Image (cartoon, rainbow, N blue to C red):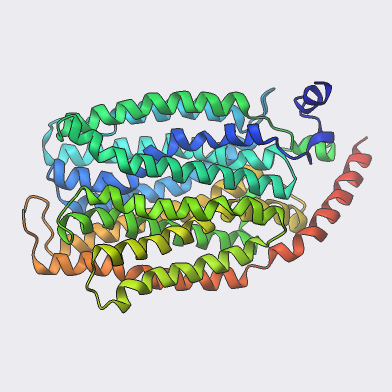
Length: 471
């Protein structure tokens, strides 16, 4: 009992302590609150506006891209806000509950689009999308992503926190994928059905956020590690981040990761309806993908504890991605249900491995940045990398909308023209192969795993020297 009491003090003496598994599980509840909102906005918003509200899919794609630019900038601002927050609860933890409330509001307004004409619907989309992603989700995600770097400096424990979180994320996405369109159908399959379904998820998200908040603890406080209290200006923090070569690699990996999700989920929805002729299979596409992801993710905590390098996991992930993309190509484009499931299983298994280690790799860039520059920017470093995720999603969604619109896609048509079907097939089958090859190249040039032991030793010496000078 005494040891637990000391652990809760947040003393720098306990900064390197492993995070107890029950706290890691509590941390993972963030995904129960956030993954439905993120998936709705990534995979279903375009479909909702084009096929339920019957507005132009190309315009929605362009508005999404513009919003993603704002969203990317807001990630950096959110990280700076977290780093400059100093309360008795820490820096990231206060923003979990604050942004969580905003996210709940977003669940309630996302599909509550008033009947104000086509232009009015575009305006509502732009405002509600940016409230949800640029403000609410960005603050929440920035705090959640930064929390492991504030919780401990123990690399294995930090990586385990991210792996456990991602396991819950994929399970949550699996349940969401299975239930979402069925919920909408149960409530009547009209706009009100979308509103009611989202509201239910909003209530669940609120309680999940509370669990995360009350189980989180912060112990890595820069001022306690060095004895010097210093708020790094945003400009200086960003300059440090931009000089961090491994941060750039992770940025690219996030970009690829999100393009993968777009080509699998957003395009997959159209693929299911117009190529396989059953929109309900869209939910099953995520199921096939995420079951494989969950299976592969379950082995990652064990592998990390055994000392397997994160770079090797990422390389293996890239190879499996490529195999998944080649399966339908080798089949000659004659997509059957079996070929689809095999392809999705490979893609899902690859993303499970990818997502299990990428956040740990990102956290390691915080130490690398401090080692290179002498400046520790935790939340800014982590949040700024989300630019890759947001731009990847925005560009992917925008290109999807523009390409489909240019090919003659019209959500009001029962049968789409051949050009639209060809575009859907190209986006779902061939584009992924290109991005997976780029992912492999990025994985091969990432070498930070080999440097980390010496970096951590050097940082311990430097911090001790600074603390001694401050005293």
